[in-house]
Length: 150
View 1: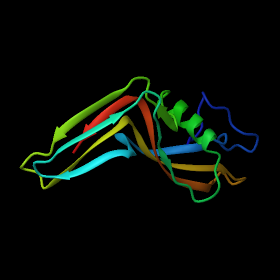
View 2: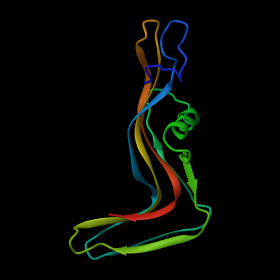
View 3: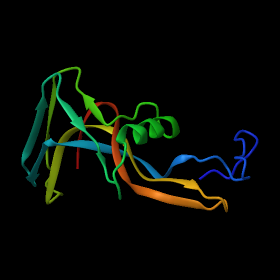
């Protein structure tokens, strides 16, 4: 939510301009591909591989119907220019990892570094009160393919 300043002209009614989306609790996170995630117990060696051209997506929740492309474009502008709904591998890659004996279980997954965040969509009414018309959360990829484990 923007309170209006010299960089943001005021609306004719004196309220700040309608920002559309606002973002909160933005955190860098691993965005894994559920179809390329494997699990195992202590001592098990896990492996994952993917062919060039494989695509995976992030997740978006909403309280009402939403234009995901508008949300993603706003997140690109406000959070990171590399955010997208989907990422595609440009190379064939893979990896393996053994769940340490100090861990009861673990996972290995293909995905990418990305962002998780809360979002709201709304506007100001005539009394300059922010009215939320839609809200939710998102977890979206932002960087090149990456293999992670727990």
